[in-house]
Length: 397
Image: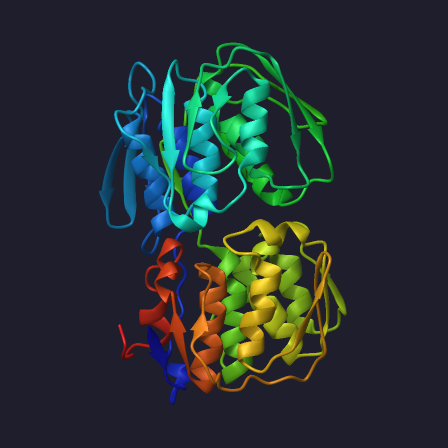
């Protein structure tokens, strides 16, 4: 349990963000399939999700040399190999989806597992897509075994659930035995992350195109020699919430323009929009709900896929904010809240549902009114330095 007291000098908190796990995990996947050396340059400390992806690729033959703020990655000369033990994806669904697709290219069974939170997540979109390609996948939930190789040429993916299934297929396609036709269905969500996969793969030699049908043929990965990993911009709304509570200015907004959350940030800062769509940025639903409740209120829409995150993030956000006296109502695809609300100290321990974004939102609220949190350690999957940053001295660790 972690006891957080109200900050006496919030203006002394110096915010920093870790390297983007969305960028870094994708580049690890690509660089691990390249014979040339790739250097990933970044600021801060990579979270556990990034480490999980790196360790999975090492088990399949990649070489990763880790130094402070720089990782050097080289793929195995003759291609990735069957791992000698199971692949542990930790808390990372991104890793689980990506390594499942990569494992499907191998001639043999690959066991894949993760922590209890990841075991509870539905991985049926990837499992179903791989089965259509002739692979055996023993379950729709971890732990499961993927047995390749791919032997059929057609599959379908529902993009309204997640962008990770298609991203995983694109990243694994260098190892495909022949061309595969992917038919896309549904209204795509998290489109920026899909586009990030396409952009990263294009910079590495992929010549494919995105459309309602995507053709994935084998290709040779040639990653750039140096890749600069940006900051984890999806955590910026957490700092905005801190500033709203304490009247501080933690991070410069201009540096986040053009990122997947820039439009959402602009609407949150202005307070002029009564309805904000999270079709492409559902990860920010918890801090955004708190910001809107403290501001002019409104409604968060187009985020039904937030129910399938580390927790059912719609329900868990309501419960967590209610602990702080902030009332939010559930909607089918999001949340609704009245404005001009202020947090109050919880009367009981606040559980974090093994959800790092929920935990960080609760922790920031606690810096204003105080609170005891359980399960706060989960923040390390994204931001290992988070609690040391917002509460330089805190008891209970």
